Image 1 (tube, rainbow, N blue to C red):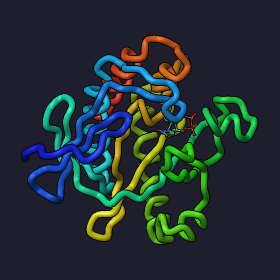
Image 2 (image 1 turned 45 degrees about the vertical axis):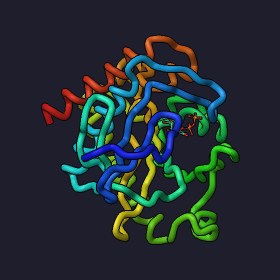
Image 3 (image 1 turned 90 degrees about the vertical axis):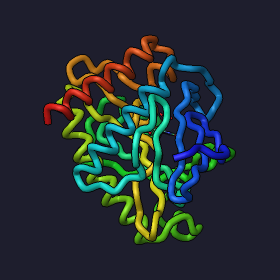
Image 4 (image 1 turned 90 degrees about the horizontal axis):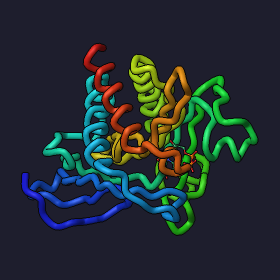
Length: 239
Ligand code: UDP
């Protein structure tokens, strides 16, 4: 497959057209941003780890019956994905209280939720990705009720699969963000799954092994990304 013109440059990835209209060429960058772009930096080789980690997670999910956009890994920084018409929502799934939920409900980080929480955010940088509910998404035409139900079903399945595999790696899956799109009328999982988009805590020490190390200046950011990737890789290999 051939890489053609760049269509879009996001905070962490560049998306290119290819000679096949069904596929995009995705290049993962080392750039890191937090707090809606206010904090900027780079994390050495993050693009390589996130590209490989996303490919690994999407492959694992696909093997367990989840439809994803992932097609193939091209090199360290590049993967081919199916072209989806993106739904402009971020779906956050939470198992343990952290981050914005901790502030919103006044509960300490680390509180284990009795059941998974499913949140919707409207993807709009200018608005700072506001939290919305299902009726907003339907009434404003961002998604149909069927699409929301499909995203919920897939998110719950992803949650069970991800929790199972990271537990084998000695990691708690605190929360994460998913994005979905539509391909031939079907809702599919898109975007990425990496330490940029998930909170991973070491099960024994509760050490943070994700982007919070960058957001909160905790140091050893690259090391944490590499460690999560290698531990989950080993867990999948032994599954
Ligand atoms: N998240 C993300 N992109 C965003 C917002 C959140 O990937 O634009 C992820 C984040 O890494 C965390 C989860 O979604 O794993 C929940 O984030 P939260 O709402 O707590 O917001 P934050 O504390 O990151 O501002």
